[in-house]
Image 1 (cartoon, rainbow, N blue to C red):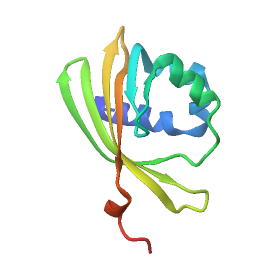
Image 2 (image 1 turned 30 degrees about the horizontal axis):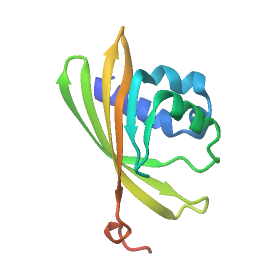
Image 3 (image 1 turned 135 degrees about the vertical axis):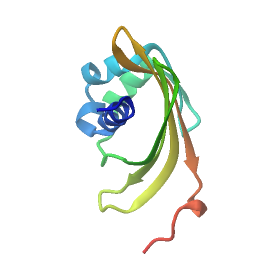
Image 4 (image 1 turned 90 degrees about the vertical axis):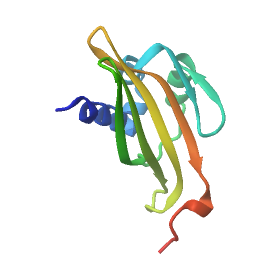
Amino acid sequence: MTTADHLKHLEERLVAPSVRRDPTQVAPLLADDFREFGSSGRVFDKATILEDLQNELTRPASLLSDFASREISPTTVLLTYKATRRSSSGETIGQSWRSSLWVCLDGAWQIIFHQGTPIPQEALPPKK
């Protein structure tokens, strides 16, 4: 498995409801100095993310697509992708561009920075 494929797999795990609500699975994937600029406009650190995810309402996992990776150094990779949120009936309710900066620390990949940028509703494909 390539590094890009491995990081894609880790990102997909992070949106799985069973993983998101379990701090023992999320914490090792976030660096201690993790920082996020959320698509909501809020800024998060690792402690805030771990607390918020435990209280998050259960919802369908976002669909991740359009992955691209760029090696910054042998131990640093920028991963970008599109996240599509869906309702329980499968209807698209929002999309955002996502970027994560992953670093390999002591042999384990962790996110040090993540950003979500909303895609405006008018930019979404027409509903069928």
